[in-house]
Image (cartoon, rainbow, N blue to C red; front, side):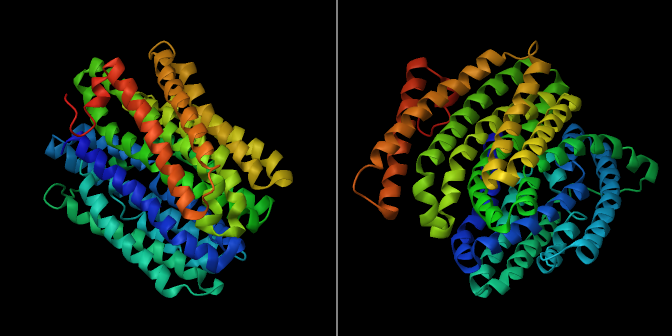
Length: 476
């Protein structure tokens, strides 16, 4: 399957995976309130840490390992069998740890946590890393989408009061497990389990564990933020932060999707010695991602105040205030993702990746401990922004002699400038005597026209064929 189709499938699935909770969020927010949303967020994010432990960095390591041997059947079967055997051991240990937490440690979130157990069980059978390494993104997208649609339907059918919140956890947890099991059918006829020794299986543990350090560090400023807001402030503040972050996290799916598709492709290029092609892909990808994230960042910031109370309910109006600065974390996230997935990881320079995310996690933890007690969710926003922009700074320190960071930064600044013009146009539109959803829709439409028109004009003036050819109907 072509890179474009893989990207489309992966973008669609990644965004859809987070978009579905957004579909249920207005209903859920009004039924369970800020405290209920905060309580669920607290339990789910602790569960997510155990899931990360169970998968042990396999999305990066496993994808890369399979991509390198996908054209060699014997090596492919052996590599898969070794990695999956190691996965069973680690995921089994993580599942036991989760059960200890649920029954011996959990407090008011215990009921919800118990119904999230299938999230940890799914780690035993999650083979997305193998499918991605084989460039088979379609099975992941289609099968997981189907089961998550059923989970979303269950929310509207069965959650009628705050005490029904456990159903939300059960529905999404079950959907995750069923989605993982359904993806096994995509490997039939391609992968065979072969006998392997524990020694050979465990040789994958160290490189996976090395990448896991970075995965865990990322979770510190993605999942642990909400755990810390709940623990150091209140569940109400965590509910406000959860809904603000939910919108931004949904949009980050675009960034993750592009990086996930490009990782196996670029790994193959490095193996073939096509360094010039890698540099070309990286430059084009940076332009695409910066165009996308600047549109999203400035777009969200321009409509957040009006959007939050309309979408989540008046109790969540402050979530709109939190969304404004949080939206700009997408820019740091996007810049770092392109360099990481198209230069650092394909070459096995994992130490750069690890150093960057550990540095970001440390900064985030320090700022969270200092700022969350007095400022609540707003303090967590500051820590998140600092962490996200730490990653590209550390990448630059290591790679300033290898990559044209000046040129890459100009891409970011160019689209940020266009984003500023869009933001101004949207805020002027907000002054019109139109309220509610009609006013919001008009703001979004104006933003899209201004940003899209300015980008197209710039591409035509600079004859940027790399981006123009991505537009249907444009001449190559």
